[in-house]
Length: 288
Ligand SMILES: [Zn+2]
Ligand SMILES: [Zn+2]
Image 1 (cartoon, helix red, strand yellow):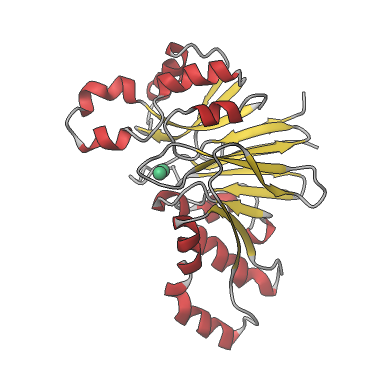
Image 2 (cartoon, helix red, strand yellow; image 1 turned 60 degrees about the vertical axis):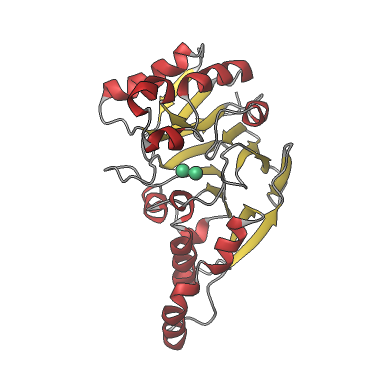
């Protein structure tokens, strides 16, 4: 068996052609785990060959709309398809606090729609099976597959002023992958990705753009994202062989733009493989 990591979205709130909102899919056999569900995740999953009723669980890194805006769609679509493909409530795991508050309210605007559909064809109500956990200061297991072969571990990261933000590590028989969520380059992710084969990390070209953004709103926005040069240094220290960049700021539109992201990691000293993310890029963990 192999484990497949697919980028379901490499974008940020500012819309860019071809880039859905934040999301990473990890599949191992029948196990399908989605990390974040930004804009158009449901569509990207379909393009990756996966329907909402096939999801084993969804994990939220933090509440910024670009990471959660498609969660209501995933939940509603799983429900709408349940008459033909019964799968039960969508399991969603999230850090306690704002994410749980969002999840508890996310279907409220659809109350009327739900009533109409239930009077029409649906036999039950849509729901997410929500599991919350306290943001852990050190890595903590938050999910385990029924057969015990796949585990998900969370750790708190640094995306302040967002209070609750986590990164996840997925361990499979084929190896491990880490998904950073949104964070500055931090020791928590560095520790989490020791021994992992793939690090999927958000990327912001802060060093390169420092002068250009000085005094603008971007100075503050960039401050809670991961500088690509520092990320290269961190990935080198952690010894992770393959770094996949996502949540790209600024979104690259040419091969030269993409090469600049990789060059930043090289400046940080990283010698491993770098993939500058595009939607639906896929990577296999083969257990080697
Ligand atoms: Zn974001
Ligand atoms: Zn964010």
